[in-house]
Structures are given as structure tokens and as C-alpha cells.
Image (cartoon, rainbow, N blue to C red; front, side, top):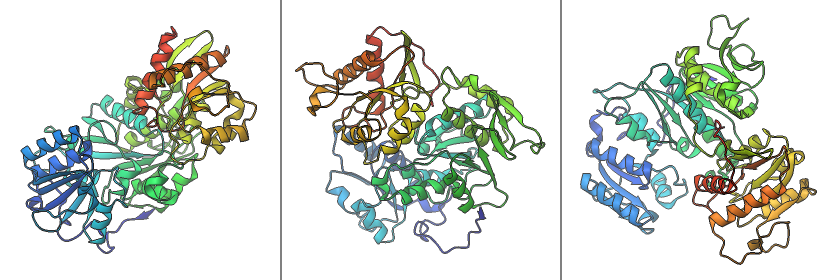
Length: 527
């Protein structure tokens, strides 16, 4: 790690007009001309905040939907200068009160190559995301200033953020999860009571547009190819994730089992005195969090770390099904809060109190010797690989919108675990090709509507294919193929939007279809 000294030349997001906007009470917000790109949850929150600060705000979104029109009406009522909806408005940078904008605040989903953003960059207009804006206004005279614990990674972010929040609450701290999960971060910043700690989930998109965050502690849980279509290359995606460590003050937490995250820490510009702390699901060395027998332990934040470790919790306290990556997530969360001075007892209490969301290594039923698991949140190969590694004999329900990734390594790694595969997705060829190359003897079922002539599946029905009927077929096929001792694992390794509205919709359809079979189950801790 190198120390950040702040002597570099002014970056493109620090023009003289915005350079001193570092507190809520800064005088420069009044009259600042701002274009807000996007009217979704984060864009709406950003616009509302900027209007409250006294800025002159123009909001732009390509979608002229009924929902967006309703949001636009609200923003106009509270004082937006203009709200421009429709694709033509998103094609160029609009003037604000007749002049060029001083600042653009973009929603995280907008790509850097989007015409409005590209034009702003070419004109030298600073571009921030909502997280950058939140960092700039976090300090205000009438309420406490929260410490930030920042979490990113290709997979496991939401679980780790939730565990971090739970541990902080168990210690009696006023804390909340924010950012890419739950409440938009600017809504949290504006809470009248304020918070002591924020557990901030950051996507690669949000990190791309965040320039000055200086968290108390930070972590990149893991890294694998994802969102290359947005970033333009894997290298750019990697760089965005690595930026979570920049300007960290107390501890950079990294994954011992993934060298890339350690390299990110080594190259990060951090505040003097910041420590590098690893986590591992194996035996920890000094300055690490890890596992001894069935216990989570701390060898980083105790005085006698050279020859001892502090017990934090037992693995069994994480839930009914505890895959390896859930252990890693818990250790990362523990490292974050221990860096913040949270006692070991609160780590255990936080793990015990943690209430996971659905669709993450969720036990749906266990009947007839077959375990049914919903991991619809496994939307890429890296996440699906972690799920598959947790079970020895699997009927795998997989497929969906692939986002251009390769499945060869995934199938090659787990071919020996596969009893059979049931494929979803309008285009099953990416997964089907990998299966034919690396698991040619594994039975594969395809829905008859795909008309590929391959696979053993088939209902013979001419009824229209709906999301529900598709999942009912997949569950019926999986039930036909499963044997005593098998796990039916719905871990698609793909996005859902080709056949479902979201990963949550897909997971709910799976649970409903399993339930219709008469299975009764319990919900496990998430991964």
C-alpha cells in the first residue's frame, strides 16, 4: 500500500466550481447548475437532495413511462428546474437555465459511453455518482457524521453488508446498510437523527463514479469476470473494484484465497497507518481472520495476535446450510467491524441475529432424501460455482441471460457433481456448449419450446410458455431426475431478464413450484 498525499493535480471531477463542496452546509450548493442523469431510485434521491441544497436541477431520463412521469411530477413540485423524459433528451447534455451545467450526477446504470455522459466528459463537466454526492454532503452541522464501512466484490456483497449491519446493531450502534442494497444512500444521509456507522454496498458501477470516499475500513470480497459489457474490459472492471480501497483509513480487508484482492490492497493509495488484514476459510496467520476447527477467529485485532486468536463464533451459528463462501463473508464482515472497534461478543450476537434475504442458498424443502435449494441470486458463473461447491450430487437448474460470459471453467470444475442439468433461458447454447464439451455424459433437459431437438425434457403441452409454467416444468424435470441424497440446486449462473422480471421473481417462481409439489421446508441463512 502507498500513502495518499493529496499532491496530485486537480482531477476532472474537481473543477473550481465544485472543489469546495465537501459538506452539506457549503455555500456553493446554492445556484449550482446540475444535470441528474436517471430518475430511478438513486437518481430521484440525488435530484431531491440537490433541490434541498438549493441547486438548479435538470433531470433527464430516456424512459417516458407512467412511473417516471409520476416521479417527474413530484420533483417539479419540490422545485426541479426541469424534468426531461424520452430518448431524445438523453442523447445530449442539456443546458441548465440557459448555461452549461456545473456538474452531472449520474445513476449507476448509465455507462460512461452514454452520449450525454460522454459529452459532459468531453466538455470538462465533472461527473459524480450518487455515492460521491452522499460522501460530499455527509458532514452537516445539525447531526452526527457516520463512519463508512465499504463493501464490494463480484459476489457476496449483500450478505456481507447485512452481516456487518447486524454486528454493528448488536454492539448497540446506530447503523444501517445502504448503497447498492436497501435504502438509497442519500436518503440515509438525510435521516434527521443521523447514524454512527453505514455499511455501504458498492457495485462496480457506483465505484466508477465515486472519486473521494475515504472509508474507515473497506473490502473487496472476491473478483471474477462480470459486467464487461458495461466497463468495456475486464481490466476496467477490476480497476473499478480495486478503487474501494483508495483513501481507506484504518484497515483494507482482502481475501487471502484470491491473490487479485491482495494485489489491489498493495497498489492502493491509503491514509498513513492503514493496515492490510486478510481473511481466509483456513487457518489464519498473524493479522488475519480465519477458521480454527469449527470456529471463526480473529488474529488481527487483538494485542496477543502473534501467538493467539480471539474466538468470534462457531460456524454452525451461521445457519442450517453453511457453504464455504458464507464463512468467508462472515469473516470479512467481522474484520470490518473489528476495525471499527466492535467487541468480539457483538460479532457472535450479530451472526445469531442476522436475518438473510431470500434467494441465496435458501433451503426450500427437504423431502424424500432430496434437498431443494434456491440460489436465484447466483447470476454469474462465479456465484454459481460457490453454490455448486457446497453440494456433492446436484441436479442443477441453470441458464438465463448470460451477459456474454464463458461457462467452460464452471462446468469443467463441477462436472463430477452433476447428476443432471435442467436448462432455462431463451438462448441455452452458451451453457449447452460448455456441458457438451466438459460433461458430455450428464443428462440435459431442455424445454420443448426451444425446439433444439436436444435433451430429455418435454411436457408435450402446446400451452403458451409463461414464467410460472417454465419453472413448473423445470421443477418437475428436476424432481424426475433427482435421487435419494441429491440436491436440486437452482443456481442459474445467469441473469433472469430474458424469462423473468428479476432474480427475485425467478426465485419466487422456483419456491412456488417446489411448494406445489407438496414440499415443506425451512429457510436457511443466505450466502
